[in-house]
Amino acid sequence: MIKTIIFDFGDVFINLDKEGAMNNALNIFKIEQLDEDMTMINAQYEMGLIGTNDFITFYLQKYPQLLRKDIEDIWNYIIKDFPEYRLEFLKSIASKNNFNLMLLSNTNELHISFVKDQVPFYNDFKNQFDKFYLSHEIQLRKPERSIYEFVLNQNKLNPNECLFIDDTYENVETAKQLGIKTWHIDPTVDDIIHLFETCKSLFEHV
Image 1 (cartoon, helix red, strand yellow):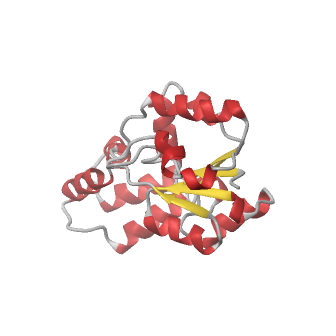
Image 2 (cartoon, rainbow, N blue to C red):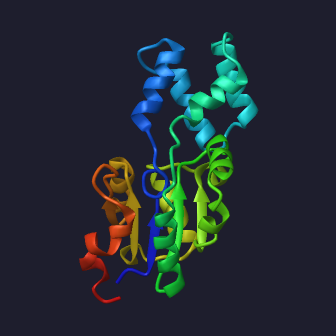
Image 3 (cartoon, rainbow, N blue to C red):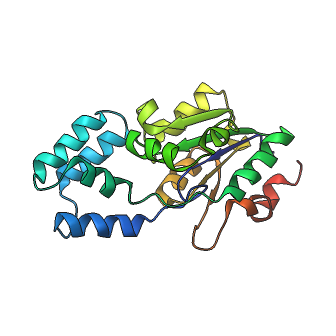
C-alpha cells in the first residue's frame, strides 16, 4: 500500500521547455554544445555547492559581452507556466490526509526565486507538502542514490510504501533500484491530475 507520494516539480506541476532553453542558450553563447566546465558549474549550482553570484560571475567571465540580466534570462528560459488546476488537484489529495506528500526537485536558487515571482500561489503550493526538498538546499541531486536514501532515512520510510513521480528516466530508475514504486510521467501525454487512474493498481486499497 502506498503511504507516501514523492513528486518532482518541473514537468510534473510546473511546465518546462528543456529543449527550447538549451537551444536558446547555445544560440546566445554561439556554441554547439555546453563545454565541460559549464556542465560542471551547472551541477554544482544545482546542488548549492556554489552561490548565485559565483555562478553568474563564471558565465560573465566566460562571455564578457553578456550582462548579468542576460545570464539570468538564459537560465530562467526553461520555466514556463504553472496551471492552477494542478494545484487544486494537489490540494484535493492533501485535504484527504491519506498520504504523506513530499516534493523532491533538482532546483537551484535562481529558478526557485523566479518561480516565486511568477507564480502567485507558490506558498499555497508549498504548504500542501509534508516535506519540501530542493537540491540546492540539501546539497544532493537526482539521480544520485544518496538523495533518495536521504529522504527515506530522514523520514523513516519503507521504500515499498512510496511512490515517486518524475519526468526524467534516470531519476526514476535510481528510485526503482531502491525498491520505490515509480511513475515515469511523460509531460507530452500525461498529466499529474490523472495520477490515480494511471497508477490505479497501486492505490486499490486506499
